[in-house]
Image: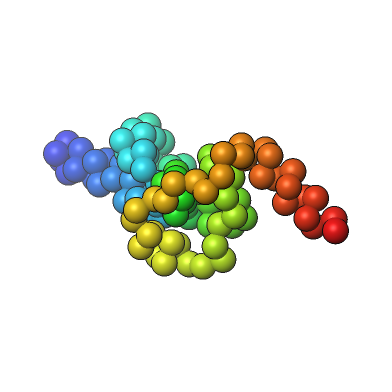
Length: 112
């Protein structure tokens, strides 16, 4: 009986890890640990988190709804994450502006 409970607990702890992986999360060990500590809560949270994909410029994870990458500041394409992940080779930034400078320039252009 104890073996069945152990396998059920291990199975429940793996569910949030697999759901998070499908949504583009990279820290799978943390999701597994969260599943071990609080299996039901971690499953619910894994189901409601927003999917992520890699930035085509720098490779950092960004939310699907993001308009700009928080790491490099480029404007993200309005395409599905599957298409964005196909761009496996990040390109070098074309300018030496910081993300804040790019944002200021973008806002100035929108005002004009």
